[in-house]
Length: 350
Image (cartoon, rainbow, N blue to C red; front, side):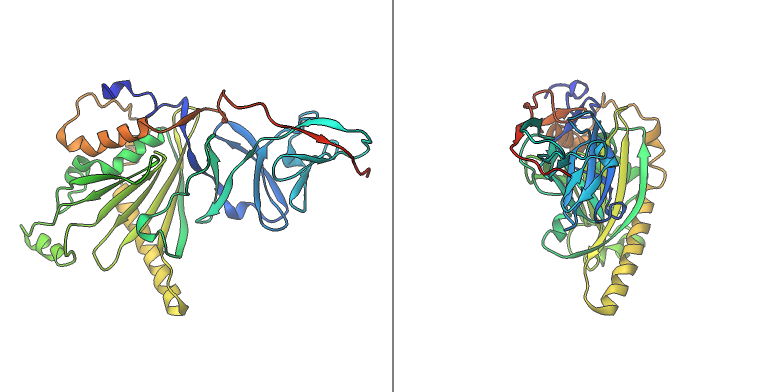
């Protein structure tokens, strides 16, 4: 890759790594409701059809440029307020009132959209969407979740992400009872996992106490998705805490983030009470590790000029990001194909 100061994707505000990015809280969009959204520099309309399906389209009607969020959701389509042109969830114009002849109408760009963890996510990229971010340990489980703090920082998501695998920072600032040794494992082209392999050494009464809760290494797993969303698993063998930090870049090189707390779903009334308690404890765990660190992200000018051995995980993460496909700000990329034209052969007048 060359010098770490010569990266072309990592910490680059002009390029966006292809992937899923959170767009808004799901509760902000009811059935038959549309909202305007500026998503990674692209103006969109996002709406929820009568059947609950989410749709994300380019915002402006190709007739005269009216914003479709001002219009009305009808069934699973949306009608422009200005002249009542109607578009389906694929961006096809399916009706023009008072128009007896066929018209060549550009098809609006539609974007893959999904709902998970109480958030609406949109796929940014030209390739077929990969999987949504998840906690590997909870991959095949039903989960309970709670949306915690939303935040903005004057720091690129890539740089914020490395804080969670900065072994020297954890060992010196947070004074963990073990010197973390994070072993990388590539799960896919877009996903990389770092897992601690160091055991707690019983060198004091405190470490001897802590050691009782771990049969092997101290549990600390950080999994990165698309370079901007990270999942954390931490805690004793009998009780793991799980957090997702979902970040998206801003045009000025900053970040907009949403914290998600998760736990394995438990059945029954008692199970619900236990889950709520664990989500509350998870918030405390996340607050402990974030305490004091967030100030750094307001002033840092990242430049890894003098890497040391303890930075090995950070360097591996940077290399992983450097090999991921990207698009330019204001997706899709400059290479976007001309939108498909759609000919409406007949219309029903209003």
